[in-house]
Image (cartoon, rainbow, N blue to C red; front, top):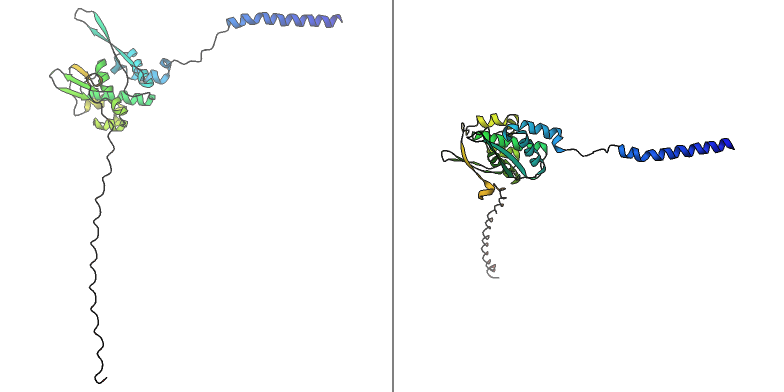
Amino acid sequence: MKSRHLKSTLLCAAVLGALSLAPAMAQTATPTDTSVSTSTNPESTRLSTEFTGIAGSDTNAQALVSGLRDGTEITLDEVTQNADGTTTTSSTTFTPATGKMGYGNVKIALSLAEASLAQAGITDPTATELEAALNGGTLVLADGTSIDLNGVLAERAAGQGWGQIANSMGFKLGDVMRSPKAVGSASANAHAHVRVEKVELAKAHGIDRPSKPEHVAKVDRPDRPSRPDRPQRPERPDRPDHAGRPGG
């Protein structure tokens, strides 16, 4: 009896001890974070690094890739060196003409934008020049001439394929994907060291974005001429009555 009672007492003590430790263990446990930051996505990081040159900074490149990927507002910061040695930071904010895109389409869009700017002689674009290359706009040069950029995203939103957009600029999409800046600079329409006085953005100045070509209505075939009425056959003259035989 005593042995059985002792075992029961020890079992109760062990249970009570385990229950007393449970709250402390729960407090010290580290919660598991299952969320994944888009900024640490390997593909996002790779694209941001690839397009840091045209974006102007790592932060701008990340903003470009994230905004194009999610179809959300993009803010690009630009630092200007003043004559007195100080710097001024200005921001340009715009929303992509397209909605959400996969990383593959983001790469194509930025490659075509870079090629179109290089074709215009711009290899170190400002934020507004980059916006014009994406959403459309006009670059007004120092000599008063202008260069119209349809905007690769505006054309895409109008229903054109990436290959069509590249062809309209005189490029082959495969060449652009291999080296957008080299393709743009080698274009026959490239300008050397162009200086842009101002940028007239499509959305700010009411310039129509390229629209999807309307479906051409099927041309009606001309009515088939009706056959002329068949002339009636002339009636055969009545045969004369058979003359009776003489003496009949």
